[in-house]
Image: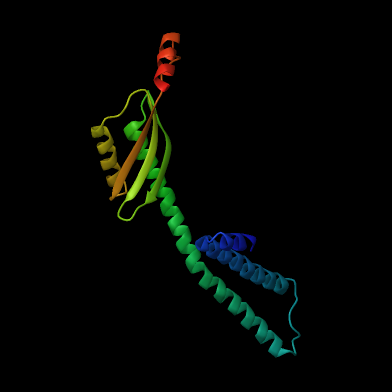
Length: 177
């Protein structure tokens, strides 16, 4: 409930809704678990109080019904999360195949759905720049790997294979100014 309040105060209504759904699911699950434990331990309404027995069955059935209704958005959320993980794995594997070499590596990968396509941003640490043809080939590989409408944005960080000599360091410093 604290997360619900915090999310509402920061106008993150989707996060507030998800946190409230989680709260209600936990509450209903606790009620059902308590009822089952009480029944297993022998706590039951008096045998002569048939009305109390029917109320117990009704309340338990209502709790199970609410839990089933709550499971619909929870299953949808789980499916979306699994899809995101699978997409992230496919993107990472495709970029590793395209750009991971003895002298380069993919250091950061993020993606976001745009209006019309998936935008994949990656940072490469490399000793030499990749040309446009290699980048377009990787973008094509991403499209066949599960992101049909994909745009790849790469950032290259040029690194050296070994330390800088004093002369190279001096020219690098001059370049930075």
